[in-house]
Length: 430
Image 1: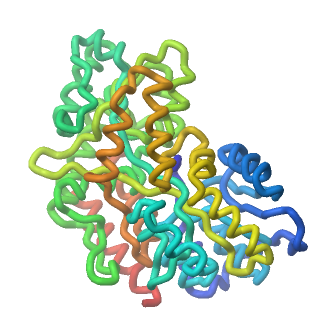
Image 2: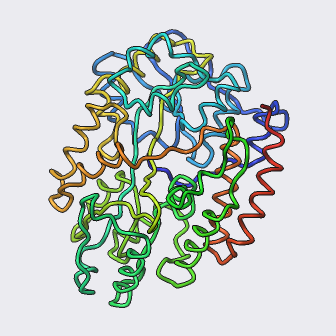
Image 3: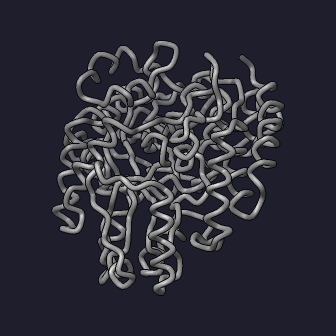
């Protein structure tokens, strides 16, 4: 998933969970007659899904009408649309971390009878688990994700730095990566190192998890806040230091800006997702490769994972066609391959193997990356916590990382974050 930075404001989340009484009423699409049109809702203009829609129409005869909003507005808009009682949506993109929240709001149709048994052995078990809440399968896993350490081979060669190995056995520590990044920067690179997602929870969760500090919540219901332990403070101190030292730049503020910096040959090392590969391959003269995601010395290697699912709207009038679409995009191997759009991994086991096998064929520099990501998905992948407080957790933790990036002291920022999250979590209806 191209996890570009979005933030659902606390006001949007809290009003959604507490009746949404203060949200403006958004107009919904007119209720569709039972025709050959499936209404799909997501982000952007639908370009990421055009191949999927075209392929589905070819095999089913069903036309897809797509409606999208800017990525930062996606979750809040979904909640608002369903408060009308007529969302005008048949299928919508679901970040699996929000499945518990969407279940509580009763906006996802139960898919258990349709796909619960059928999905076994076809989808990664961890993705099925992410789609399931209170014993019900509520979404269809579509994409998967991982993270890589991309590097500019030309910049490293200029600095006399040996290109890192793609083998998981040669995984570097964060300190080693920063050491090399500083050396390449001293040899002329504009920026030594960067996180693609800059300060987002999805990409930075691994820093605290590698040190054993956990995801920021604990307890049976994952509603006990834990963002000020020693591991969080250590990770925060390290994160702040790479910007204070200047090896990482405070200039870029989002994923696209970071990818543009790398594509322009101005960035030595970039931690980013496999979705960037198709984009990087289009750049003439960009000599790049990838290595395993780093970890902290003395800690454990962990990598981000999971991505968008598809949900069937609880109020759809097109259930049969919606189910057919979910089956095609998730369980049909050919459909699942098309659904990746050439830039994402798949939650479908066989489709994912095919997608991975194509990567080194498209760029010889990426030989072995398919093996590496298969290893990561099986051994180091972690998922974001499935807590009813995730919306607040993501927003406030992301803001805290941003503050640290811009010079705030982690020793003050994370205890303050602890207090703020505790106040916010008290408003959540258990």
